[in-house]
Amino acid sequence: MIQNVTSLEMPVDEEFRIVKNHFTNGKGKRICIVTGTHGDELEGQYVCYLIAKMVKENMHLLQGTIDIYPALNPLGIDSMQRGVPAFDLDMNRIFPGNSRGSMIEKVAHDIYTDLSGADMVIDIHASNIFLREMPQVRISEQTAELLVPYAKLMGIDFIWIHQAATVLESTLAHSLNSTGTPCLVAEMGVGGRISHAMCHQLVDGIQNMMFHMGIWQEEPDKSRLKESIVSQGENTVAFLNATTSGVFITELHNDTTVQKGQSIGQIISPLTGDVLSDVKAPCDGLLFTLRAYPMVYEGSLLGRIHRL
Image 1 (tube, rainbow, N blue to C red):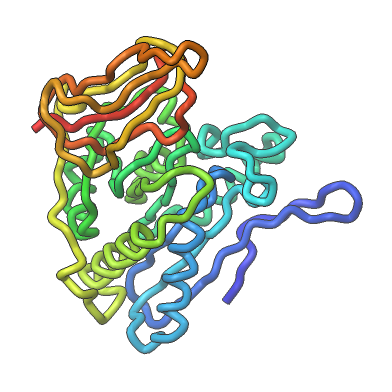
Image 2 (cartoon, rainbow, N blue to C red; image 1 turned 180 degrees about the vertical axis):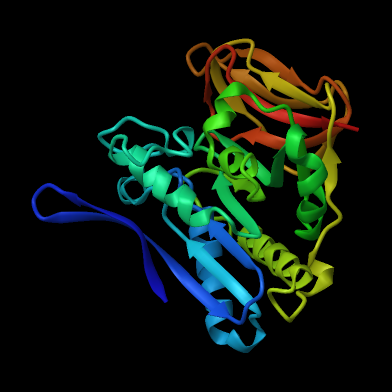
């Protein structure tokens, strides 16, 4: 059942609406699948489609409630902009919102209120257009004890337990977790694209979580679930940053194990034909983030390596 989460009148007889697909069958637990916070992150659109299709075709397996929110930033998705068009705002930096604030603050408040009280929220993101991420769940240190067991049920490649920066305090996940609604952040792929295999992998993981929570009565094929690598603690992740400006060329892919001193790629000059710098791995580890957009400037992030 399609339901309104929030709606506001706009100029020229238009209406701004955020909707959800509400599936319920019984009095069990409630899980919410959320995506579309950033308009250039499209992986979650396919995930929402796959889950909605699965539920519609197998309502007899549902024991509880599944709410699907495919577009928290519909204007951004329509215009392929990361933030909210015309407001120059990152939707994921204004939660929990304000019922008496500006238009977008009120929208954020209504979304937050609608999600509050769920037994689990999965907040799905892709990377931006500059970086490609292997499938992962990101969890702040403050919520690791509660959330890591849930994250492991998803059978996803990588779980990154990180120190929360101040800016993260205004995200949807932090706002929900800090008020008692558990929320996991899933990230994968690259901005502006849909990686079909990654999306199917995440759907299998969500199905497995729902099975263990008693929401869904059928397990996925366990052979498709992975044993997650968990990264936690200081200095467990090494960052690769460009030392020069130029074009970053690499033959590597995400989910690659590298050795200390191994060449990750080169930064070249199209003008002079020179190699400006050879980017080398500072440690042995798993390359879980890799630059997708080749134009770089000094300081640009080129990759992240989980130390092994």
